[in-house]
Structure formats: C-alpha cells, structure tokens
Image 1: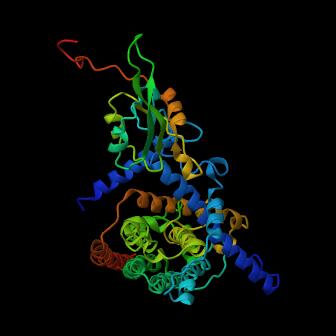
Image 2 (image 1 turned 45 degrees about the vertical axis):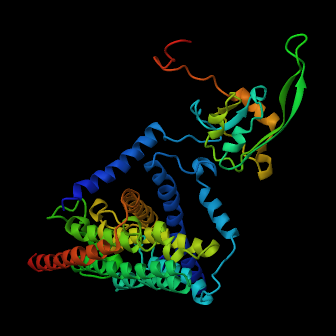
Length: 163
Length: 350
C-alpha cells in the first residue's frame, strides 16, 4: 500500500503533460512545415574547401568506413619568383564522399591538416536513389556556403606566450 | 432494438441487429483509437500525434486501415494454417457476442435475457481461446510464450472480474443487465433519489477490482505481459500481418469499448438518468426519447471509463509475470471475496 501515492503521482505526470501540451503546444515541431535550426556545431554534412586540399589522403586513410574517394595528379605550376624553378602542386581530380556509407564520426574533419573539410549543419539531402548519396567535388564545394562562421573562442582560451 | 422494430419481418430485424452490432463495435473502437491511442497518448508524451490525414489527423485511422488491407496475408510455413487464420476471428467474435447483451436504452437493445451478466462474463472469455490458438498455431516460440502468458493472465483475472460483479448482482437482485440499469436509476441513497443509486458508490471496491481486471483482460499496459513487444515481439500477434493483424487490433480496442460499456452498466447507471428527474417509476413509464439519448449517455460514460483505462495504460510500466499472478491471486481475489461477504451481510441487514 505504500506505493499508492507514487502510482497517483505517476498518473499526475502524464495528465499534467497532456494539459500542458493542449495549452502550450507540444515540445516537438511538425517537421516539413516548420524546421528547427540545428545548432551551428551540428554534424549535418561535410563540406570541402577545394583550394585548401592538397590531396594528402589523410582523410581517406583515417575514414573508418572508407567512404572518401580521392584521386589526384601532380602538376607543375609557374614559379613564384621570376627565374625560380616551377613548383610542383597536387591537383585534385576527384573528391567524393559516399553519404550512404558515412557514419558522421568527423575523423576526416579532425585529421585534415589544411582546413579543407568543414562540418555544415545542413541535413536535408536524402535521395530516392542510394547512388545519388555519393557527393562529388562540386557538390561538396557547394556545401561550403552553408558552413557557419566558427564561434568565438571562450575567454582565456587563446594561446598564451609568443604569437 | 427488439422493442423498436417488433413490427417488421424477421429477416429485416436480423439485418438491423447485425448492422447495429457492427456500429456498436466499430464506432467506439474507431473513436477510442483516434481520441485516446492517437491523440491522448501523444499529448501525454508532449507531441501532437497524426496531423496530416484530415483535420487534426482525424482520417489517420482510414489511412492505417487502408495500409493494412494492402498488405500480404502472410502465414508461417509450419503454421497450422486453418487454425492460424481462424484465431483473430475468434477473438473478434468474442467482442460481437459481448455487445449483443449490452442495453443502450429502454427499448434499444439487441437481446435482453435474464442471465445477461452470466452470458457477458462467459463470452468475454472466448477471446482466451483465440489468443491461445493464435499463439499455438503460429509455430513460433515467441508466439507460443505470448499465447501461454495470455491464457494464464486472462484466466487469472477472469476470477476477480466475476467475483467483483457478484456484488452488483447481489445488490440488484438480478442478472439481467437491463434490470440492473433500472435498479440503479430507480434507487435512492437513504431516501434521497436525486442521483439514483449508482453502484459505484456502494460497490466502490467492486468497481476498482472490476476495472483492474478489465485492464488485465484487455492486456493493456501494466498487464501487457502476453504482448510485451520488447521481449516477445508482440507475443501471439508476432506472425500476423495485414488484415488479420487489423482484426486483432480492432478487437483489442472494440473490446475495451464494450468492457467500458458493461462497466458503465454495472456501476455507473448505464443508459439511464435518475428516474426521479422526470417522474418515471418503472421501465415502462420511460419516455421514448431515452432510446436516442440513452446511447449518447452510454457513449459518454464509455469514453470516461476508457479514458481511465488508457490513462493507466500510458502511465505505468509493465508488471513482471510473477507480480501479475500474485496480484490477481493474493490481492484481488481475496479482496473481492471479502466484498461479496460484506455485500451479502449488508443486503440481509438492510
């Protein structure tokens, strides 16, 4: 019999939630009609800043799902100063991420040494055909526009000492 | 019903009875599913539930039924096919048999016979057979366990249910459901007849036991051990799909409605209003408009009781099998026996 007040309390919780939902509305949103803004650090889709990529393959090698495909070739670029040697640069031919395989771990973004990969909070890119989930270089580049500005560091988080 | 249509040929009477029965089963079932299962449950979980099909999702049920009807009628290879296909129909037939005895107004009833309470309690246990053979015929260990648990639970809670009703029968001096309604509404509380004498006041313990037993008979949540979707993957319903699952689903909620109707007859005064309000003295002096208002009153009381059933369902976690059996045999049955004793003593004393 000692449990009876607890049982009534439990009924009170559900009834209270019902009254609150009827009066103030639900905690959920009706998705296709209204959308919640995801937090800016949300892991929605990975964007590629092509100019920063050196096709070093670190992301492809660190990917647990092997869902990043990179192909590139070396090219000779004109020298920086007159009379210098022509520079050798890595030219990116293909950079695909297969979002049918990606598990959104973010290791590629972490591991990229040249800030070429970014998280974007966009999430609406489902496709009727699974093959269309393979985003190529151009499409990954378009996601760059949706990458939010990095939030300011917390106070005291800057590196101390010499700049 | 018979009182209203006595003048027309027998085949037309039968047709009207069948139609009336279907309406009396499906209308409450549909309303319960939409109002309580879709909407109230969602609100209790702080969400809106179906909103797209029709205004506020009111046509969602039709969408669901359409979906189920499209699905393939599957049965396991090693299932006993005839029995397997028959099981949901047996469960549903129990609901229809049960509604046949429910009076909706002074003349609006399908059948009206003396042993109404006895009949109702007897046919309500037909569904146990359906559940048991559904579990057995599925050729699936989860279904078998679910069916056996269902049988064990339904038999265990049949007893407190029957014993709780005996108190009402003793007090009303009759097993005829129509007479029980009349006895409550023509009654008086210590000479004051403004409210009649609904048996929920004098048989409150019986009412509580009856509602708990109904909850268990319907295998609604604190007592949903036989279905237990997280461990038995829906128990005896595991192998059913499409139309046959739909029948199980309908019968679950239709039976909830019919049990609520019976509870409202036994404890809340059924279709009647206190007779003193309009100066009625017996069932023959009741005005004819009660045949229209009566069903509405019944419906309101049914919704009230189903609200309580569903509220409990959405609030509590599941009993363990041993807790469930212990609760029936060690708490509810002794309590209802004491209730019968007390009722008999008071009946003789007054």
